[in-house]
Length: 136
Image (cartoon, rainbow, N blue to C red; front, side):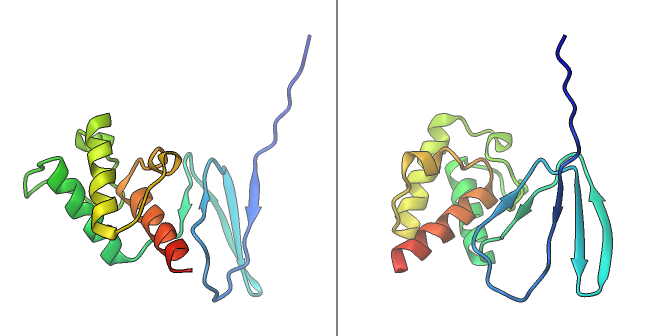
């Protein structure tokens, strides 16, 4: 008979005023945030995600694109947290959204990048990353 033992994952962060690249942390059960000599209590959640957010203007443009492509009513809530599938998009809608993003931002989204887009924030983060690479 096999046995399996698991321990909770822990991550520790030191906050410094620096520019941070796009990053994500997910599936973490407990996170301790020490800042200077102070330590903040562990954050516990079923789903914990840290996302280095794109510019507000980029998120707003993506919201407009999604709203237009899905023909959403004016009172529909579309923001960075909105999951594209939850807004009623199917795979064809998602392809059309990616094409509109490419045209609007004058970028090329590779297939593997397009597959990572599940929310407006994911799309905005990808756009920022591709614009940064394009400008470099």
